[in-house]
Length: 151
Image 1: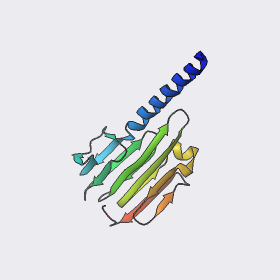
Image 2: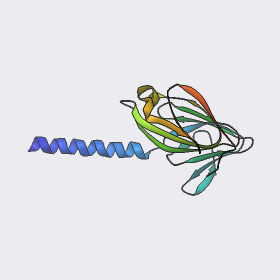
Image 3: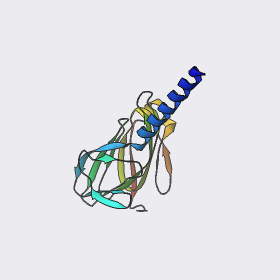
Image 4: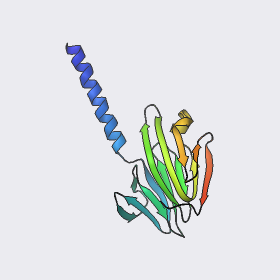
């Protein structure tokens, strides 16, 4: 009986730790040039170096803007001028390097250097545009949506 109780307590502790990890930031802004806005929970604020980026955040660059974001699995995202991207999903276990990444590129350009999740399981990483979904099979690539859709 005591052994079953200890197992139950361990399972609850692990579940709580997983929830904290899933609720934390997905990454950090590493570089900002020109106008870059982060939209979160219907609020807008300028992106600054060191600012956390969370799941569901939208990043918009102006005509002179560019932003570099490093996700916690070491994935690098670099958006150019007049770009819009959304971090739709980011789940990462730093002990096993397992997780899931999904990023929407609504317009503009995004250069990507994949991190630990893609190295472990490339099928767990996808990028989608208004007209297609890209699975990751390489380590570096560029997505160019052109004018695209802002929504």
